[in-house]
Image (cartoon, rainbow, N blue to C red; front, side, top):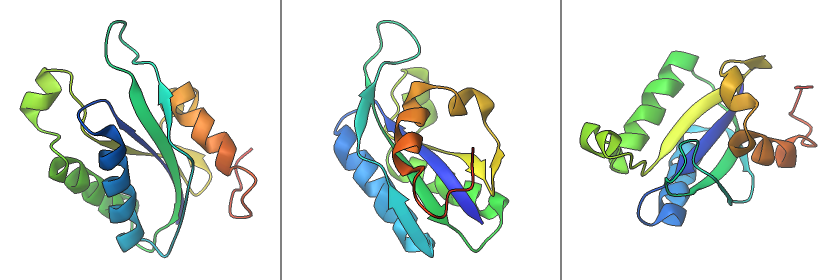
Length: 129
C-alpha cells in the first residue's frame, strides 16, 4: 500500500518530534521518502506555528494496522489527553492518501499537507493527480 502521511508538531522541540516520527515510520515501511520540514500557521488564530512534513511510504500491512502504529508513535512523543486539552501537539501523524484514495479531504486541501505533498509529487511512486 502506498500512503502519504502528514506529520505536524506545535510543541517543544518540534524538529525532534518530526525526526522521531519519521524514524519510526522508516522502521515499519518497505520504502520511505519525505519532504523537507516547513512551518505552517495554526488553524486557530493565536496558536503556535506548526512544523510539518509529509512522508510517502510503502507499507505492507493494512490501513487499520498502520493507523494503530501512527497513534502509538504519537503517544510515545507525548500526545496525551492533557496535551490535547491544552492545544499542544507534540506529534500528529495522519494518513491523508492511501493507494490513490484521498482519505482526509480537508487535510489534503490545506497548506500544511499540500506543501510537502507537492514536493513529493514528482516521485515515480506517486499516482495522485
